[in-house]
Length: 100
Image (cartoon, rainbow, N blue to C red; front, side, top):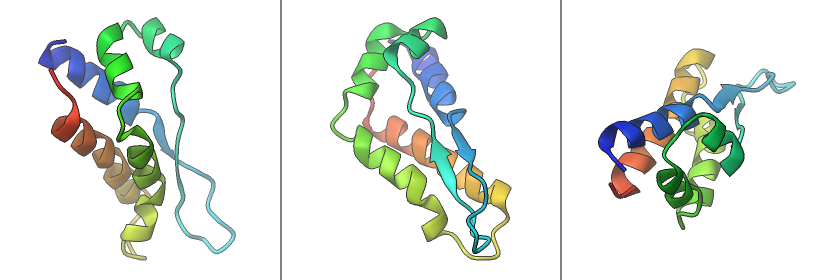
């Protein structure tokens, strides 16, 4: 897997992070649509790289950290900023842990 292929996987996963409907309290909520291997293959991503990331021992922790991102933000942070922070979780995990 090349750096460009890894970057493509990372960007694909970052696009799976989105804002959920606001909670009744008005708090920002983030969701992560976990892709299937077939969905990633259909996106023409590197198959071995996708398997490496989806099967990584840190995958579940990353997903949990993405969804919990709003809890780490300030109340006054706008929703789009919270979303960017959640997407940054994906890039940080992959940059630090994925092998090229």
